[in-house]
Length: 270
Image (cartoon, rainbow, N blue to C red; front, side, top):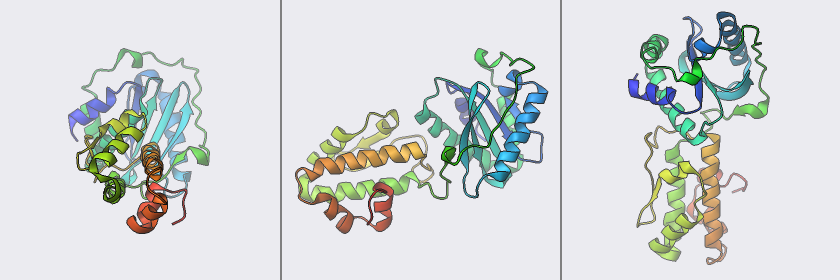
């Protein structure tokens, strides 16, 4: 487990606490250990275990409100559960990228995840905002999240590589009609205003490349990230449709596989 990945995650603005548990060892709390007393931590642990045990199969991430925190639970392999407590100021695009890296590191150390994480995190200073305890009588309530709070399972969330291949197939197909320069300009003009999308470079060949820290073959898209890419692609297609007759039909019937159509245009039936 790389120290820099753990440190970058814990120092992310908006992270107020992290807990790691595997159902065998005693859970390790970072940040929350300073703001929650023993009884509150025990109640939170039991509540999480109950929620995880009753979560519909396949769902690996969901969120809920806990006291003054917004919390995320991530179910990893080997029975490991990662709890992240957050507050205002959390940039979701940064969080999704950082949590993806942290999950990989934790799962690489599955047999000693808690011990290794504790060793690294215990040497990382707590931000001042995490040292104010909750009042002893503060209730710890954990309600089972609504189905709408559950995030699609990783098994059904696609990898960025799959999405990039589909998008670049759209781009390649369109260059046959408009050329590289025009297609590249259309991608630039239709890119939504989202910080995460700034990590995509549009090359002179109209090829789109991702320049983030996690390789596209390892980066499993969050619901939000997948929506960003779908919105961008739809805006691009709409722009092209103004100059290419029946462009959406040509695209979905001649250029893309059925799976690529599902990834990019889930509202359409191929």
